[in-house]
Image (cartoon, rainbow, N blue to C red; front, side, top):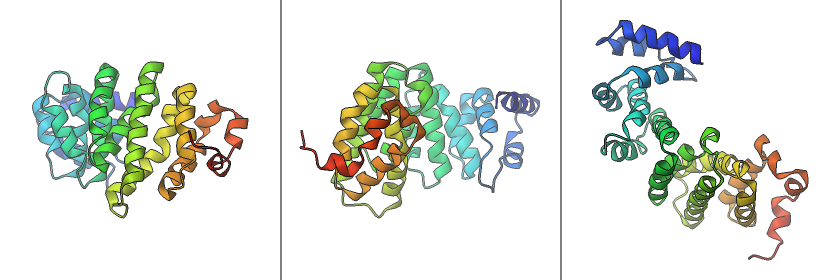
Length: 244
């Protein structure tokens, strides 16, 4: 990926002021995968004004590029996070992915700051919660045990809100459920000691959507950190345990 990013950075430098046509032509869309290497290159090369303009574009790929790149501006511009929070509810899923990329860029520079902000986002609607979970549950960000504990508590709060809601047929809930189907395993594998009791609590849930989330996470290869004997205790066994 690094080589392709550098290639696109060089191409963008040749085209100062004339990027939009090039971005559209090399977006990879329509197609199953957007050109994420080009997205990364834009994030590294564009100035703040261009990133803001792109993020507000009606073109999905241009908006993805601008949104993802704005993560670089979070530390110096207080207006970026509120805008990203608004974009987290954009109807275009690639723009929502751009929000997660932006937040992860922020997290690489200031993980405590990202966690603090995502703790607040976790109390918002499903798509904002989805952005918070996806942003935090990125393995390179989860290096410090105490920070992982806080991430796990964010996931715990989101899962609790999922279990409490009756609004489950909307796309926003389905998007959140899908993200939570992998986020728990990412965070728990980064700190199994802290993750185990929370996973066991939710594995006892009889809620069908929570059961699906937990089953999906247990099937991830990264969960081998918990050991075969723990994984062999299926959800049905744990549901028979006494609740704490």
